[in-house]
Image (cartoon, rainbow, N blue to C red):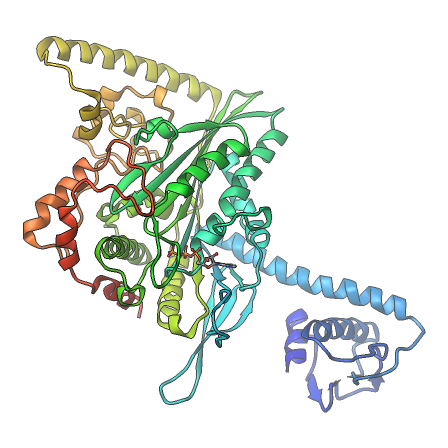
Length: 598
Ligand SMILES: Nc1ncnc2c1ncn2[C@@H]1O[C@H](COP(=O)(O)OP(=O)(O)OP(=O)(O)O)[C@@H](O)[C@H]1O
């Protein structure tokens, strides 16, 4: 009854008692035949032509006063009269139907935006070259709905429907995916904080969506590349009214260590905030991060990412007329994939990585669970990943999750738990997103406060120096201890503790802020520079008591290490002994992770 459903969708209630008749005909019981479709030589061949026929049928039926019956026979001869007219109305009716669907989706998304829900787009990876011709677990996809086939042990299949803001099938192109993401990305230039993160089982296509395949061609470039080039195009279009300054950071969270990528070889966030003025500037930095990202071959994926990667774009726009300032930031996060270690067959270092990955994803799951329950106590501090995403999950950011699934029957368990997780994420309400905007007078006052703070800090520094003159510390040690870490030198002004807005470094008196933060814990900002510096050690699940100190030490001292360039086969660990303890650790973590979403 495809036809009847379509008719009723277009005009609910307008089609009385539509009955599907024999051999491709639809009868409306109380009238004569309306042979509007005689010119379709091949009759009902494809689903598309069926829908088009339906739409045309409806419009003709309405023109005829709403009475009659339609008969659509196969292989009828085209009638010469009025063919052009019919074709024309057919095309416009079909596109009208598409428009209605599109409108519906837009309205739905707008309602979600008003509530501030996290948007969820689902993407299904195609079968890969060389994979045997398997039966897919995906039964059907339509707009925001995806139906998964679940074979029962007793031979009877069942189906499970999941609904998201949008579902992309295996044939969706990178451009189509970006097109649906573009508006969100553009709002960064309007002063919003945006976060897009890719989630899914290992090998399901996260890196493909965010970056692209290993061999990059223009048509295969991922969201990151398109997003950045789009921002420059738009900024350029607005250059007569707003002047934008953009800068970019690449951060990797590898085994609970934050690693920044830069050309200068220093792993300090401040040093890696690279001003960019063109797409090629960004591509160079992204390529550096991409090339150096910790990647290994596992049984599930030839090039499995072993770390969470985050590209952050900071935008500051100055209104050339009013002098007002707006600031936006965007995190583009490619998470490492959850994996069952029995399936990925990893051991040694890879196993340790998998455990870290699963643990941080489990922490993300816990945060989502708390947010769904609207709990006042959300454990963001349990992992660097959740710290990084804190303002995107709990603040007034616009957040989009790309959830990825693999189509293989073998992955069904992970597919279902991933989709169930995504369903819960979609119910998280962040509150309507806020613009980070200052009028020119506010900016002036902030500038004044900043320079006063800086003066005060200098003064404090001088008096401290007089009281406690000590030998100077080598730069390297300063970095390790975090004393010169920009995350300690918070980018948040004292008078603005509750704001989640990132402020430029020059507005901040470092010493002053450190004092303040000792008295009153401040809210974490969205800026990775503010994050990841003061995280507590990992929770001790599964870690033998003996190792806890080691683990603590890693978390604390590992925040600001000298440059660690991570290569596929050449990963530099500061404490290799740690690995042996971790290997003894359970392999049940991934199981625990999946059991969370049965
Ligand atoms: N939409 C797609 N079209 C074509 N190939 C794809 C698509 N999605 C993924 N692939 C291919 O599938 C393989 C696995 O994808 P990818 O590495 O992006 O997965 P991942 O989820 O990032 O995995 P991991 O978590 O292990 O890093 C790659 O060879 C990639 O090129």
